[in-house]
Length: 79
Image (cartoon, rainbow, N blue to C red):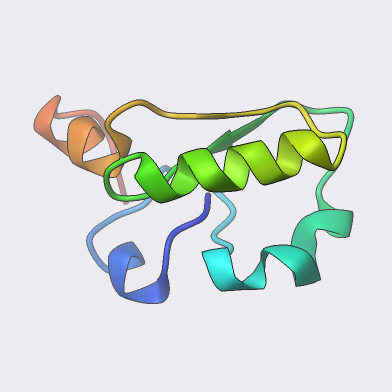
């Protein structure tokens, strides 16, 4: 999950790993490349850029359309 710290206060997915977008380079080697990655931000725009960067680095990554805002509007769980 790539969201900035101030966004996490609004809620995160249960079990999600929070990595601020600005720290992607420091973390990407610690993410298991054998597992698909779903990247989430508030709206889906920044996470799309992060998913592109991860895909270019050899990961299988996608972004969640609508981001956390869509998750919350749908009444789906966040913590």
